[in-house]
Amino acid sequence: MNMIPRSFLLILCLLSATNWAAQSRLDMAGLVKLLLAQGYHDIREVELEGDKFEVKTLNRQDQKVHLIVDAYTGEIKQQEAD
Image (cartoon, rainbow, N blue to C red; front, side, top):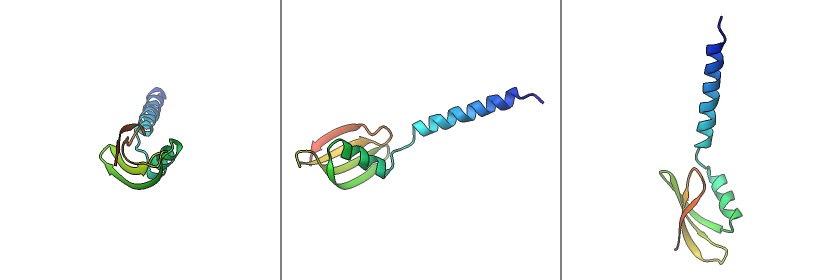
């Protein structure tokens, strides 16, 4: 029995699993941890809209802000006063 095709299949499965893991969406705990680490607090509202989170929270200066956060990378795409 030839093992090369099975080995090749195993490698393809591992690569696709790695790619899938890299593209998984942040969960709520991950989002909150990320925002707290950046100085945001008193997170009041979180909504998932497609590939982005919309968040209402307070910044370091205790100002109400509305954030748009990429649901996959955690990057803050937009911040505006709320």
